[in-house]
Length: 244
Image (tube, rainbow, N blue to C red; front, top):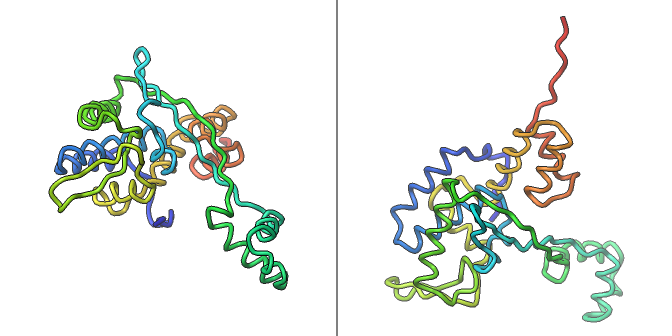
């Protein structure tokens, strides 16, 4: 479930720290998992799918930093011509429908897995070991290594058994919607993309309306310059010259 952005402003540090504190009331594994997720979302502003697919092997301590290699999954909607090709192969009878109806079905098809192309790439980020949020990531990693050493993913899937125990599936990861359900009880007004929007605002305001800002917003969120410009125009006021 996606929340309309206009419902609230971006996150404050106080809100994030309050969520971390509220997570302290959870059982140990769920507490550490929630705090790690919040820390990663706060520092890097990654998409839900990029967080859910994060593997343990892609997190390493290098010198005084914690390096994290994210796998980017950028979705691109397939065009009308690709839809026709899909129908030719899977359901050629559909091609006899009127063009307006085909276009309507094509738009609906774009919302399915078949109607999208996912381009995979990697993005290497780092965070200082002295950063206060790094502590939450490392603490969760230590717990996971001790209690589920064969888990491939940082946020492995699992299931509750009679409400008394939780069994981890070491070969599967949580979905984006499952990550959202980790966040919601800690603050019902927050959703994961809000962390991304907040990181974009933070970066844009830090560097202002400059080419350096454009580069940094794009590099931080792994987006195009055009999309980065939207963050700058939205969050950094264009200052007018002083007139005497």
